[in-house]
Image (cartoon, rainbow, N blue to C red; front, side):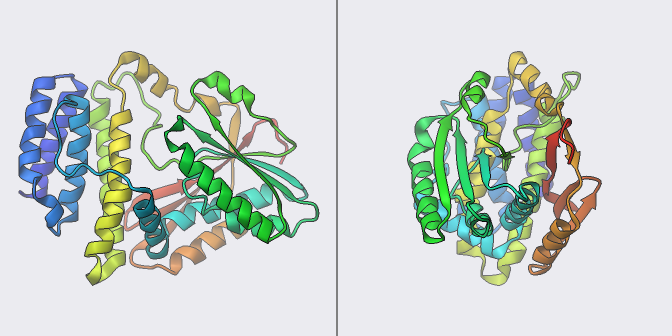
Length: 343
């Protein structure tokens, strides 16, 4: 199959899901499954992505259909894949370093820092920040991680233990806790100290600002947006692995990209009530304003990305910094403060 033919089928399936034409959606998914059934043994990264998007459409159209080779994340493999991604691409470090630098600048002169982390994963973002904070006299760091349910609680506790051990090794006063947030009212339980930082690393395309006037929001916005994003990310990783990429790339593809694609598509709302919630996705930022990133932060980001080369570059636009690969932004960073905040 040519890439264009696969793309046409995927978009046809997406349009059928948007229209809730389940018979057409299921038929399209079955056709895609048949065409991509042997993809895992091939060398085509595009077809690998197409398979993950097919699995996502399958979930939305007919959950009784069983997909072959559906990826299931194993914690040990996920850690290894994440470490590999960090070493071979600036994708992770760009976000972490930029956020940490902004936190250090925003908390200058503060001894108590409380961070709300919405996606802590393995916690690899925080040790470099902890080292910097440990240089402040009587510094105290508290991290509260937000989880949507208890399914990931064990892994989060392990992350917390590792961070506590590291904090002890550098003599940093440290507290780690987690909160299950199910309803908006649950956020009121968060204890706000003198300095509160919200660290939000959004890895899935699940919080776009959507208009209810768009008839084909799935086809015209979300699906194409997600497909282009992951195609670019996959292409950048293939270039990072060069000739001997097969085993390592397949691990990242299965344990990270595949899981995130499925999570993104499973969360896409088809009900009118959910669409209304998504349309107001950024309403909570109305009381905030973006501020420019510092010269030091921008210089650090550019220096980091220059170490990787291979088509990566940094785009600076207004109050936003983007990591790009060729012509496609892969991830962006921005800083928001309350509108009433003076600095």
